[in-house]
Image (cartoon, rainbow, N blue to C red; front, side):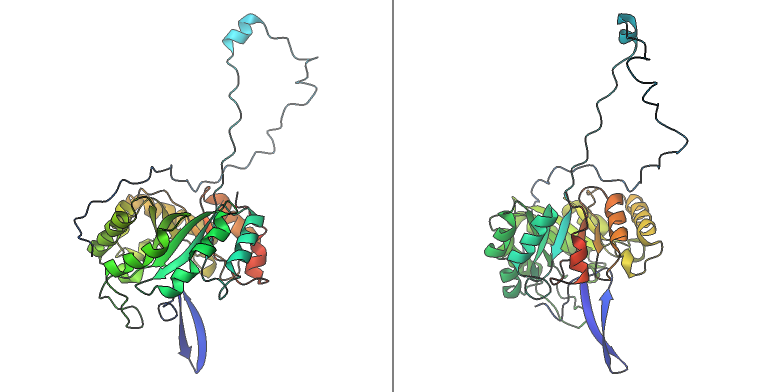
Length: 338
């Protein structure tokens, strides 16, 4: 998840690199044989299958036909022959999330963000806590006071960071430290009270770098034994096959948070994007529970955002909380998070 600014014809154009949300220009070894800690028990992966629409021709029995006066009384024989109907299915528990980029800069203060999140019923938040080996700015962003603003309201907190393969320069030619440096950086906020887990945001820099991906995940698990470790990256898997999906899935796969940025003009919009994601995940044999992420950066309609949530199971989320009073933030109040 990231942005980059470029110039064309003398005008600065803000280009969103989908999928992405971490701006290298703006932001800011443990042995590979170290054993990984045990992984969190996985939940069944949500299936992106919409329930069929009811057939208008199939009408419910009339009240008269089913009333006690017209229905025959049950006998002992009929009761034994006909099993009791199953109890109604329990409604699915929703645990939808909201991403927080940078408090007081790209969004409201932590206290105001937490106030709004609680009002909307947000179950969990993802707070940015590192970018490569650059820490102080992000340690403050995911610091104790900001985390507590959410936990005291009963909201689950995860921290996320953008990670780089070592010695691989980003698009601007900058490198961002060794794996050990980056793990130490995120650990400063991940170990604090109230943090449930870490989400690794890894993208372009890890293509063709499966060994570095494994080292990163193993190092995080060794350093953060009692925290969940998940990963987020491309939600359009097919064009990004050089990315080590299977390695991250195996070693950072307490959850997979694919960035499904349909609002950036992806073919098929919501439905087509999710169908393609499901097909690619099955083809690659990925096993981590999927918590898909949608983006409100292009300000999609409430109807499209609701359609995404309806199709993606209980743990989907949206990126991200914009400044107070913006259209994107106002629309968040129309979504159901729990």
